[in-house]
Image (cartoon, rainbow, N blue to C red):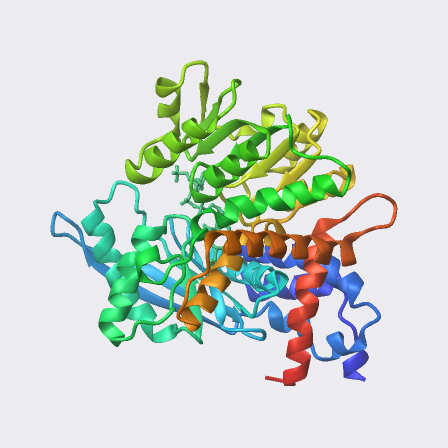
Length: 451
Ligand code: NDP
Ligand code: 2IT
């Protein structure tokens, strides 16, 4: 009978590859999840019969559109924009918008797929989506960025809504861009609703949303260490990236007594053996965000630091590592180097920064390894709290939100233990996160029947 005709893992992956030609990032993200889910559903007929994994790995819809804008010299420029609405079984689609020249449909499909499980793990009612454009904000004037954001929203507005799909920031999209997009949405629809998160505090934003992803990734790291009777005091940390997630992860490491050795950007990494202290982090934030500068300038500002062009920081010996820049920035060889140099824990601030070979190596070495969908969920969690505050027309205090963020990260850690504790002293956080996230979405889908 067709319903009990279980497709095995290789056949399933062959189908995913065939249906998504050239979409390597998407195939990679599906494989990482499917590796664990096939074991979990082996004896669960209903998930097979209802083709649940196959359905989650097929976005509800992918909207692609042209974005025209005029640059400062009067040239007409044409970019492509997308919104991938992956799954809304447990709540409105929710996920960031990325502006970067590397954005493709494959990248956004992988991000929307990952987001579906991540959002489920937060315990809040949010489905998974992601959007963006191949627009490159680097070197553009603020007026150009404004015109691009307005043009992007002029199409996007028809696909989103406070109860439909709620975008936020991601690479290349911060508070300024959210402001431009929110302003345009409000202008077109004449509605002031919680249609975007990451808003300014004066117009419906939430306290600690800016800090939440980086802080959350460090709370998760601290939880993993605590499960082994350890903490961050005196531990050295290697961090990649120097944007929103990286700088706030660095800040929380310092607050919890650790020493941050590196930060990076697409030009290379800086290594500061004296430690990247709070005043240095503040300088990086101002330099990268407001002055839109390069990380290598750090070495002119702070003596004793060195810059290595064109390289990632994984060769610097450390106790813990936090990849916080972009996908596939930590490869199999890097994972081997980190483990050989004594790294005991990795917490992914970025989405899918470790490639499959790297993930397999970390699992094989049995170090503490937190995948992005668990470790970086603090950002979208506080976005979810921003949605709640908008719906309730109120604002919670910083202390309340800090506590809620901590509680949510503790909850995600516990969910990972439920399905990831191997009972021999090793906790497989990848497996734990994949199964816990999948189960919640899958059970909602079962309730809805074939839709
Ligand atoms: P930002 O734009 O603030 O910073 C991105 C950083 O990563 C910059 O230092 C940038 O360097 C570097 N970077 C980006 N692309 C590349 C690349 N292709 N190669 C090398 N370096 C690169 O973004 P965020 O900090 O918000 O996002 C970083 C990661 O965290 C992403 O994976 C994102 O999806 C993930 N994330 C973000 C959340 C959020 O709330 N913002 C929530 C959860 C996950 P440069 O300046 O040279 O471009
Ligand atoms: O990858 C992510 O979780 C984000 N970029 C944040 C998404 C959100 O809706 O806050």
